[in-house]
Length: 397
Image (cartoon, rainbow, N blue to C red; front, side):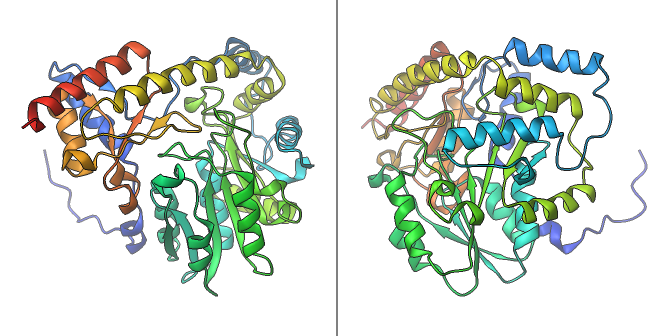
């Protein structure tokens, strides 16, 4: 095979892009399976349920009816209206369809909002541990990510005092995520009210990642957009992947003030043009159709949560809080004496359990692992047995 004649010269900005550890671990796990190893997959944040039948049928009908052409960049009016009604009803706020932007997955909302609002040298507050693409996108636009912690002793809820202390004249954007990946924590209304009070008079936007808001176990979901005066300064990021088990459909949306939505639409025109029309029609069916699949999935995740948390807390060196939302357990593993990376690698290669080191989500994740319980109870129990056996064999005196 001939060598390429020229060295690939990448733009400097590519060096500022990060990645997602979940996909890296999945690749390594698949390689082990190709060698004949049996791996229990608890690394990927993806519901293991099928998309509800009525949603699939809506997509098939849309294909047959000719929904195979371009849509407006910001989305089909049918879906914008359905999202406005659903997002507004669930949060108790008024949302106009002109404030809705439809994208292929929810990540583009994160990327486009940062591109539209954040200048080089600006500062963006990001949760640490947190979804790694937050920091990646902030660095990509030559801004500075400023991490804020999620204390375990607070059940991984934000510490508003710490956040406010980190705000400077360069702060342009704050990223919230509730329910939270990777910890499963959630932000209550009282803390959001404290944060809103502390931000009074400051020209700061908040990007609120609420992709897991239908998957909450304790209490009601709270959004900063519900507070007086904050809907205009909050961008809600949401989508269909988690609640409707539609990860591969690539269908997400943002709710934001209309003038910002217009600017995000310009970025869409310059990048992906529009979101597939037939998947948007499936989205309409998801929002307006039978919601029992969402309720059933949440009930099953609640059952699995108990199995996972109770099992982890029986393993020597582990302690695990009860997640309030999403489908992740985030046990503290400092009692094992191992780093997050060392233990995650050992569990994968020696125990056949794929999970993520907490450091895949930032420096604040050291001392933790993330286990996704988007798998069957039987597989979760097997993963717990393997983990306990490995710990007892390697770390017992």
